Length: 288
Image 1 (cartoon, rainbow, N blue to C red):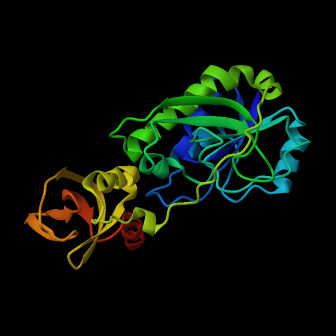
Image 2 (cartoon, helix red, strand yellow):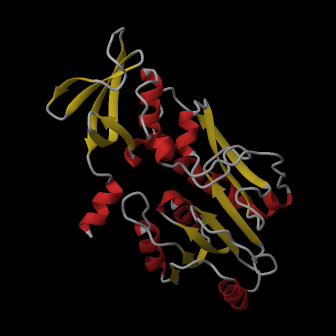
Image 3 (cartoon, rainbow, N blue to C red):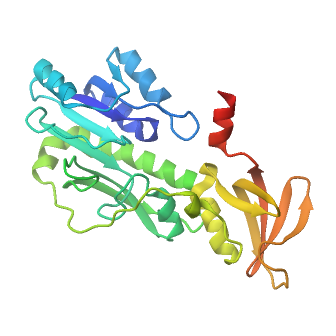
């Protein structure tokens, strides 16, 4: 089957898996990336190797019309990690589907992985669904895979699980059976939409217990949490901790060794191990 891919490296394994399964790529729609949190190097390199056009701007009706003029409706639009709502594909492509890193209808929205860990989900998943034109992540479900979330799950391990699952769904189900799956697609019903995380969501509150603080650190991982350490604002990548009765007010720095700080929490201590006074995003801007 011929297809156009819209996405970045986040779920770029879907792009690679479709090519591996024998599908013919027509065009890559991607977007500018900061090279810190978001990347498109791999999908761009793969598109160049396949000698197909690459577009960084938002998909417009004219882009879909051009693909329809060249290929009729005999192609699929496959979306994975693309931020813009796409309209107007019906009548121009036989299929349009999106890969979303959540067990829909739970966790619609731009990036649900942080909250999956923050809210303590014991299972998570990836869903492939019909690309809806009236809202994000609401289309009928084509295929879904559910997997376990470990008690110590981190943002990075959950992301890897989603990437592996998306590739498995592509190769094991959709690349082989999309027309049949399309006919059997199931409506989602009522669900939940999770907004993009902000700095408040990323901020550590040492009035909480140790487990809650460390869960927040794990949930954001290399995307960084934000902590007030004494008079300093720190961007935290890694922390550990332990429970212990004490009389220190929460947030008190009780010990420092080299770049490691031990900070009092409600029921123990949190040790800040990897941190920077400048966020990765700001450091990237400084370097440009």
